[in-house]
Length: 192
Image (cartoon, rainbow, N blue to C red; front, side):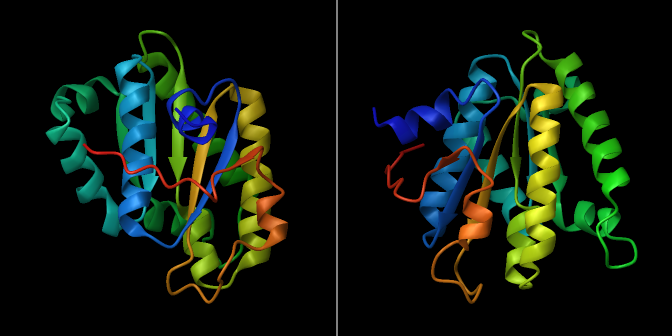
């Protein structure tokens, strides 16, 4: 198993992983590996995904044998719209840092209470939505806020950035350096 694949399976403790990608299927594979590994270990998994992605990954988890109804009812699996959350965090077009901290902290505390082993992993795509809108400075600030949340709540976070149609051929260095690990060469063909 590659070190990068191991990061998706065993991201703890307190990792801030970035996966910039140009291949949608590989991105879905990476997210499935990250989420399914956490659920298999009885961790809570919070997926803050673009609306266009939620159905795909939830279907993939169901095909993988996970009882989504039970996991969601227990709070061990939560799927949240990154689009809606980003609108909440930017009520006047500017990132409200207090809202970011308060809402994400509350979400993580609830997820931790739902995990039989009190461990949480989070996937986030809000920053990818910001990059697609060329709001790099706002994405940088949100990543900095995530760093504080990671340390405060002892979680691991996987961020993905689609480079497809973003106007960027690579992840800007200013965003890359805000992560502890980069999966830019991850090419595992994971079969569900």
